[in-house]
Image 1: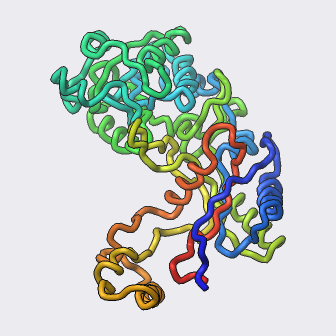
Image 2 (image 1 turned 90 degrees about the horizontal axis):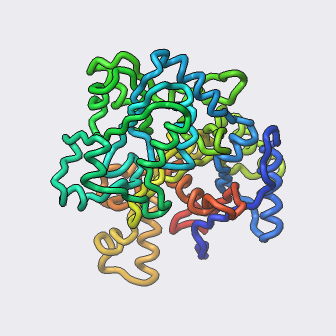
Image 3 (image 1 turned 135 degrees about the vertical axis):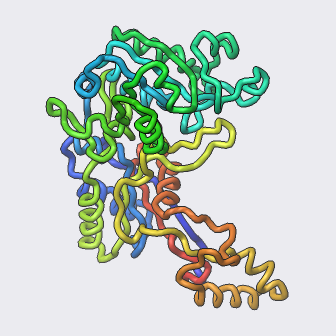
Length: 397
C-alpha cells in the first residue's frame, strides 16, 4: 500500500545555544531524542535543518557598533557618505545604522519608495497615484515627502521609519539629510561616497554608481569581511544577514557552515545507519499577501547544505495528467496509470507541459522557507526542523 502521509515538518526543541557549544552533538542528540519521544523513525533522505541564528551564536560571530564604526571610518575617511536603500527594520538594520553613524560625520540617507527592497512600505501605491508622484523619476526631499505624505507608520510595527532612522543617526552625533529616490545614481547629487545597503540588487547598484563616477563605493556586504579588533565577521556577506543582539551589538550571518552540515550528516549516520540531508537556513523566500513583505532579508536562504539538496524539483503535475493524458480513466485504473507515468518520467522535465505549474525553485529555497515557517521567529523554541517525506511522490510505498 502507498504511504498515506506525505511531507511532515517538525519543529525540534533544543537547549539555548551559547558561544562555543558543540552543535554537532546538540543537533544530533535533539533529533534522536525527538524521534524517541514522538515515536518516528529516522529514514534515508530525511532533512535536518537548523536556523542560522544558532550556528552564528555557537560560533560567537558577534560585532559591536564600535567595530562597524571603525571599518566605516577606514573606508570613508572623509567622514561623509550616502547610505542608500537600507531595508526598514529595527532587527535587521537599526544597529548597523548606529554603527555606520558612529563612524561618520554626515550621512545622506536615501530611502527607496514606496517600499524597501523586501516590501516594507513607507507609503502606498495609491498614495503615490493620488499625489501624482512618479517613483521611477521623482527625487523627494524630506520636506517634500512630509508635505505630500505626512507621518506614515508601518502597519505591523507602528514605527515611522523615516523619523526613527533620522533619530538614530543624530543620536550618534552625526549630521543627517534624508532623500527619497529609486535610482541609485540620484545620491551622486549629494555625495560621491556611497554605501549600498540593498541586498539582492547590490551588484547592480554598485555597478551603476561606479559607472556614473562615484568616488567611493562599497556595499554592506563589504563591511566587516574580516575581524576588527577581534570582532566577528563574514568574509562573503559582511553585514548582510545580521540581526540585532543588543542596542550596540549584532549577530552576523554564520560563516564556514559546510563542515558543520557534513559533520552532522556523518554523526547521524554513525548513530542510526541512515543518510539524512542537512542544511542551515535563514529567512524564507515567500511573500505576505497582506503586508506585501516578501521576507528574504538574508543574502541567501541557505548558506550551507549537503549535496542531496542540490537542484530543483522534477515533478509531474498530477491534475494535468488527470485532466489531459488520462481524462477517460478513473478509480484504480487512473491511479495505476499515473503511478506508471511517474515511474517513467524523464530525468529533466524542464519545458514539458506535463510539469507546468510545479515549483521551479531551488530545493534549498523551498525547504528553507518551509523550515522558516515551521520554526517561526519568536518563542517556539524549535531552532531545529526535521522534515520527512519531502522527496516522496505518489508512488512511494
